[in-house]
Image (tube, rainbow, N blue to C red; front, side):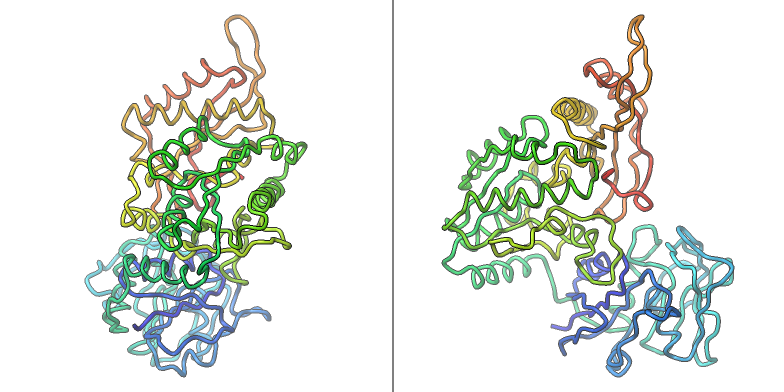
Length: 502
C-alpha cells in the first residue's frame, strides 16, 4: 500500500492536509523533518509553517526528499523551501497576502479541469522572487506574486493552502497531484481503519483491563464502542459528573448508554471536588490543566489495582491545537486530553481516534451502529462549561449558563436549525451592563451566543441564523433567566478566532 508522507513544518493545517489525502482514498502519514520515513511511500507533501526559510533556525529540507525521486508537493513554506533548495530566491516582499486571494492559473496537469481564475487561501509574508529559467510559474496573484511553480514533471509548489475549504477547487488540486502527477491508487477506507484499529487494540491490551471517560459526546461514545468491540467486558465506562455539564446531562448519558446500549457504566459524582479546585481560578489554560488532572485522578481512584489502561476520545483537532502533533506547531490552546495530562499518571493511554477528524469519527460511529442522534450531537468540550464562563466559575454562573444553553438549543430544534449548524452554544462573559426591567435599573451579565458551520472544526464560519430565531433566543434568555441583561451574537469565523472562547 503506497502512502503519502507529509512533512510537518508547523502549519496549523498539517493534519487537515493529511485528512484531505485520506478522504481521497490514499493513506497519509505525518512525520517531522528529522524523522526517517518508512520505504513504502509514493509521494511527499511539504506542509506550510510559521517560520521564514531565511531565518537562522528555519527548518530544513531533508536530503532524502529530493534524493527519493518521488513526486513532491510543497505548500506555502514547503514551496519556498523547494525554491530555495533548487536555486531560487525567497524574500520578504512589500506585499504580504493573508486570507482570500484571487489567483490566475496557467494550465498544467495539477490544475486539470480547474477554472482560470480561482479564490485561494493565502498566509505568507515571504515570497519566491527568483527562479532559474528551467522552472515554470504556473499561477500568479493580482500582485504578480508566484502562486504556483512547476519545478519538474513531478515536483510542484503552491503558495496557497489547497487543504482548507476557503480555497476554490482545493480538493481537486490535491486529487490531481495524487492521481495525475504521483499516479497513486486508492487504498484506504474507514472500514479498513476499524478492522486495523480493533486488532491493534486487542494486541495492545490483550487480557488486561481499561477504563474510559464516557461523556455522551461523539468522540467518547465512538471510542467506547470501538474499544468495546476489541476487548468486550474488559472495558469499563466511567461517567464523571464534574459539575460543569449541560442541563440533565447525567440522566441523558445513563438512559442512552447504560439502559439503551448496555455499556458497563459507572457514574461518579465529583462536583464538589472539581468546583473546589476551580475556586478563584481565572486563567483558561489553568482551568483546562486542573480539569485534566482531576479527570485522571478520578479515574485512578475508581480503578486502583484493577485497570492498566485509560482510553481517551482524543481526535486530530485536539492534538493540533495543543501543538502535540508536532514539535514545530504553533500552540493555540491546550486540550484536557493532551495538555492537561499530569506527568505522574499511573495509567497507560490509548487514543484510538487520534488520527481522525470529527466528521470521520461520526462516519466510524455509523459503521459501528451507534444511533445517529448520539453521533450528531453538537461537540461539547471536555472541560465543559468551565471554558464557557469567562473568569471565575461559581454555582450561580453555571446555573445561568446551563439554562441559557438549553434555551438556545431548544429554539434551534424548534425551528429545525439544530442540524443545519455544526456547533451552537452560549458563553457567559465577565462583563455586566446596565439594563432596565420594569421601572428598575439592573446591572446584569452579558451573555454571548455562538454558532458555527464547519466540517472538521479546523476552520469554521459563523452561522447565518435568521434574525427571528435569534430574537426569540434573546427574548427567552433575558425574560426567563435572572442575571442576564444583554445577549450578543458572535459573528467571528475561525480563523482568526477559535470556536470556543477560552
